[in-house]
Length: 482
Image (tube, rainbow, N blue to C red):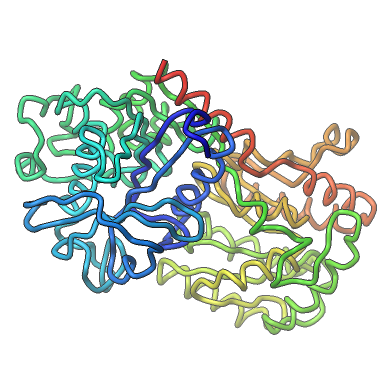
């Protein structure tokens, strides 16, 4: 891109990013934003930790920053490209070269997680202040979740005149740290107040970002409103409400090239004009999960198996759904009790319920291509991507009416059906009674082929890409830079 065409330079700071590391939707968003914003004239580079083996994946790696003592050891930043993304990897072996995942090993958090992600934030602030060895310096820094929460704080407390944005992907994770780590995290003691870093006698790195960032975004408009209420704010609702004028709900998108039923290499290709070909994928999905004939809707669950995702509601609603002709294929992992409950359901309903514990990206594509419906009964959902994948593939979402689920799925009400606008089914409150009623509605609609096909086509017409959202981010960045 020519120099004069650049609207601005943004440093994105996150703990994970597709295609390098993914534990959830955060990585998808961080990986998608640079490409989406490039079309708006913004040049974005992603800074994340160089977990074990990641530096080897950089193309044309170049050392662009060096630090002496970074929270207990030396560090460098390597610049390079991965699958078209401009990446900056913070290589600090004493912090990141270890067994396990980004946050834990053998089910236990790394004890020095506060320092590990404080180091990431500290380096981001250093880059904002002094730039990199290749001459690149950001005009704005965009931090993500609690792992990036100290970036705005270091900028503010360090007197570094670079604007900052923090995005809350899931407020349930707040980076809570004992108060006696204040100095170790290089934070000023004078800011340990209720209006600053103090959070119920401890430190919250997420709160630190919320009170010091120039703008706060959430990953859907409804979630932005929900976070100001005790039922969803999880102790930070007052902080969010106090900064309401700086809170922006910007819906996530999905990569419509990766998630494309007409070009998905994992599936028999189809589109809204060739819906009959979806039946071929349905047959393959049944075979893959060991399912027999399913006369009603074949539903899928592709999710973390946790209470937040409402997975505990499924055993209560499943018997009636199976009796009405439905079938279920489950892919996911999470709480042992819920994994066990899914296995028990498969044993109770052989040939109608199939379960795979774990995660398989290719399998998830085949599931969305072949299923009739995707179930997302989350108790809260900041944005959610699975319902968008469902829309894209004509796999109608059945969702709890919360957060991004409420913003993306048009409920099959009589008026929406009459207008040809319905794209799924939503229910409220998030309990077994309402969920069961939604599944009964699903089976009724499935029994009406013309109505069902019209809903599928409406769903597949829904814009779920990054075009609108990237424009909103670009407008926010431009406003911050004046």
